[in-house]
Length: 336
Image (cartoon, rainbow, N blue to C red):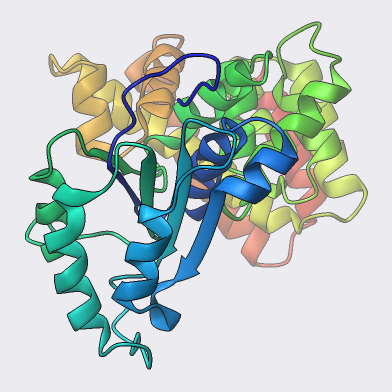
């Protein structure tokens, strides 16, 4: 981070890259805002697109003296874009080669920030050149994987001064929100809803996130596994009673949950642990932990009996019996 009130060593070049555009823009914003006032930023930040950039322009911007500031920033986007073809001073390849040779000559009062909104292979010419430059900084920004998403949500909430329960994070992760930017917006909305006074629960997500279609089913199957008849019936009424989902779709999710419980019980009884459940069944660690704990509430023979009953109900549902009645009977039976 740059500070105007004291001299520090500024990396001659910082490469910010990866497929998480939201994280890249956040890091870039923090760097720019570290220069201080808007006037200072206006006078000491130069920004270029590589496709419109000649090396002479880049060098002139880097060699410029900061105005009433110890530092200035020069931002360049898209060196690695294969479609780049500069009409100022040659091809983008020529600009790249000149740029690499110039890295060791950047003035100490200039911070060159290179932004690549893509993954870079380890043998990338740009990546290798920046890594070899003394004092340079690499910032890789990758989209969270499915397995990382729960922790990403919790970390983001913590950064905003709030918190999510495991079920709340799972509900949001399962809601199909498109990308970190939209997720961050939903997290902010949910923390505002609870006024930062308590952790966000799955119920909060269901109330406020339009795409939380899977989250309400999660609550239903969770309450069934915990034999919480009151919550299970409430969630069933919310799902089916207002026409949000077809009964057969809800039933399919319940069957899946009990299949997971049965498979988990078999793994654990054979001497396995939660890590084995995660790996064998291909589950997120949070889900593996949850089904492992839930399966302990049942004997293996009980789970086998329940699963056979569910398969029989599945046949009845598909042959024209009243689906909602079957669901009601099922919930009553499973939570007794």
